[in-house]
Length: 267
Figure 1: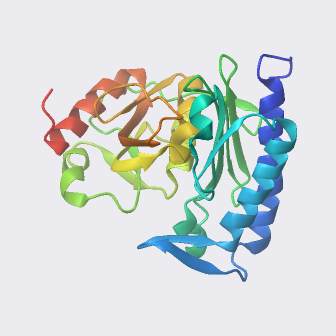
Figure 2 (figure 1 turned 45 degrees about the vertical axis):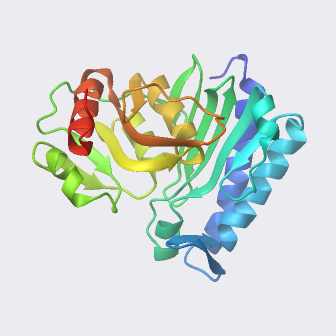
């Protein structure tokens, strides 16, 4: 992505914001910071809040008229009237951050008319910087990346959360190789980079967790749908999706079918 393209300025702003936030986060990782519970089993740290402040200030300085949706800011309806919206999770995988597990990521997505156009997913603990822009491909540390070509579900490597419901997940355990990875933003980026054949979640997931990762997988040649098999739309009034299935195009439909079977959804 060396030549200018439609959203090159937005991608440049997202890159700068993510790197600056990453430096702050790593200054606190395995160090001293405050932890509070926003709700049951939903922690937030000084690192989350400071990273969010840095990203909001950097993006806001470049694009003050754009909408904003972040895990660490109070949502408001202003974004719904705007075609351009930033969808941000300053640290996806806060529990991993707290536990000292290097499987968290800064996730910045930029959306136009409901579809992501720019994405950055940065794991500063591993120095893995993923970026993508619509029609421009996906990259890891400036090297082009692609999803795997695997077509058989049997033996496919799925990257999953450490907290998925085991009973529902048994249908995948029976036929796939399962590897736990913390942040879903990071899992999606790793799938885009071919480090896994797919990722699945049964949970209802917030837009900020997956917005950047969805574009990353799509630009790497893959497909991402919700549990019902529908393409994801962002900047919705209720910014959540029921389930996520991400994989290459050869595996996507079959994995989504197993998701529906496990959930008891009728075709």
